[in-house]
Length: 190
Image (tube, rainbow, N blue to C red; front, side, top):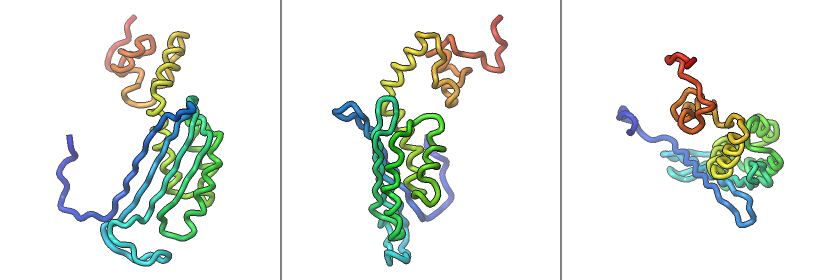
């Protein structure tokens, strides 16, 4: 179902994010992201001169190589297009993400390492989406871990992470009935 029809408008800005997850031959996983910002109009830039419509204002890449446990082994960033000549200097700083584990506290840890003047806002913002792509890339490994937890009578870690995985949702009732809770509108079984 598409969005409702908009009022008449003109394009101004476009941000394209493309992310991929790959399984490597060595058993590790690469999570790659590319961000590109363009404008629908020409404008003058202090460092680059005139930027034409559709020409990249930002063009940036990140690759995270992770283990099956979601630990970052290496992190590499590149800034091909930036509004200022100094911007690409921030990209190598993202190597300090090696050793972090994607999971609870990841965004805080990223901000501690490459937040503010240590990094680049656009590269840093990509990392939250890349964490989600990493989860999706390693879904098979996560399912096996969840099955092992359930077999040990331990609560699946997915419960409570989104609407579909609410303890009261039909998804949880179907997948993990032992961990399901009655919705607030239904009286609890006695």
